[in-house]
Image 1: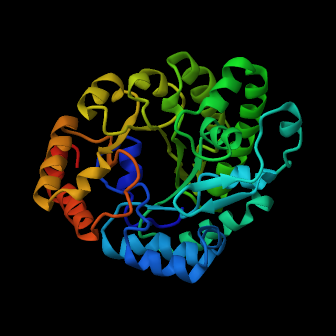
Image 2 (image 1 turned 180 degrees about the vertical axis):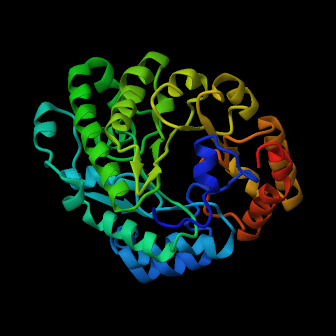
Length: 357
C-alpha cells in the first residue's frame, strides 16, 4: 500500500471517523483560476489540454497549491468515451461540447467503434499515472466519467440540450434501441473507470448530469440501472485500499432512496436538497457529498461562511459527509471567495467530529 498523507476524504466516504469534514470542489481545476487560463492558452485548446499528460497534471495540481483541499480530481472531460467511440468531440466557444456525428438509429449504433479504454483512451491513463506520481501521496486522486444516460444524451442530441427532446423521444418511443446504446455505454464506462483505477485513481465519481431530466420511472429504467451496472464491474479495492464510488445525479434529490441502493458508497446531492433530510433518508447506508449552491461563491466571504455553517449544522455530528458544491464551480468566481469557503469548512467542521475524530 502506497503512503497517503491525508486519507480524510476516503475515510469519510467509507463513513469512518475523521477529525473534520473533508472538502473538494467539482471543477476545482477550472477557468476561475488565472493560472488555469494561462495553461489552457499554452495548450491551445481544451481537448489538447486533456490529452497532454503533463499539462493535465499541472492544472489538476493548481487548486491544491492555493487551497488545502482533501482530494484532487483528474482533469479530463465527461465525454471522452463517446469521442473514442467515433463521434468526433469538439468545442464551440460559448456553446460547449458538440459531436460531429450522432446516434439516432440502429445503423448509427452499429457504426460505433469498439474500444478498449487502456488503448483508445490511453492519454487519460497517462494523465492519471502522472498525477498520482506528482501528488506524492499528498491527497487521494478522484477519477471520473459521465453516466451512461448523460453520455447518451450528448450522443443523441449532438451536444447539450435545453429540453432533451430527441433523446427522450428515442427512450420512450424506441426503448430497445436506447437500451442497446446504454448497455454498450455501461460496458465502455465500466472498462474506462476500471482502467483509471488500475492507473491509480483512488476513488471514482459518476457524473449523471442529466438524469434529473427524466421522469421517475424513466430515471430508474434509463439512468440508475446503468450506473448500477457500471459499479458492479468496478474493482472494489486497489493498492490495498477500498476504492469508493460516488454517484451524482443533478436534480435527483427525489430519488435518494433508490440511488442509495445502486452499490455506490457515496451519493452526491445538489443544492435543492436539504442535506439533513438526505441524511435522515439514506445516511445509514451511504455517505453524502455536497451541497452548497455554486452561486453562493458570488456572495461575500461572511455570507459564504454563514452558508457553510448552516450546511454543517444541517448534516450534524459524525462522519459520512464530504463537503462540496452542489454542482461545478462557475468561471467568474473570485478565487478569494473559494479561500473563504475552504477556510470556513476547515474551521467550523471539527466541532461536529469530537466524538469520532
